[in-house]
Image 1: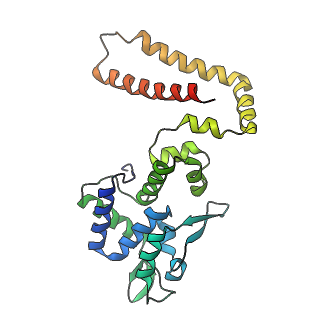
Image 2 (image 1 turned 90 degrees about the vertical axis):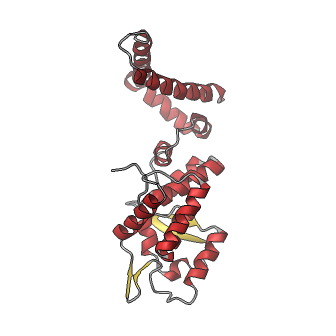
Image 3 (image 1 turned 120 degrees about the vertical axis):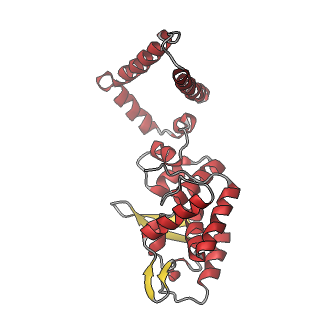
Length: 245
């Protein structure tokens, strides 16, 4: 299975939308609703025209506990949706499969269209989560607020959200957001069975081994490439750690 990545380039994003228009305008609407709000594909396909027409936000129940989350519809997208649904049956599905049958496009068909459009413009990392990841990546780049996305997507931790959008965790953000209760819990867990020192020693041992074998003639270029990447990440983490009060 290919890794599904967000579309990060604005021109590529526009080209992808235009490619979907050529297939069928409804897929463009589906895509714009996904990248504009962060809604999941299956939720978008379940909407009827009345669910999104003249709406500034959409409430969706997510997760096994059916937690209600609000997905904001940007003003420009509201107009696009309203223009698309104007004069249509309010009870018809927004992304209609066939005009003679009031059933939505299947998730499999939507996925095939997205993949085909991606291949047409040279993108191979396209999947059902592309729209949501694109929304999340753009929102994070604009605001830096990983916690809003975590709550919106009902992720268990911000680290999951960072992985979801393919970004490195920002330790400075973590530290600044920690509550006194969370700090107390961290202290307890780090002292429990010596976990804190065990984890630190494990990291020290791994780094010591790399240092001691650094000049080995058996090392190839791939080894030094990995070490360079590791050190760049460590440098960034340590700088954030030192600068966070």
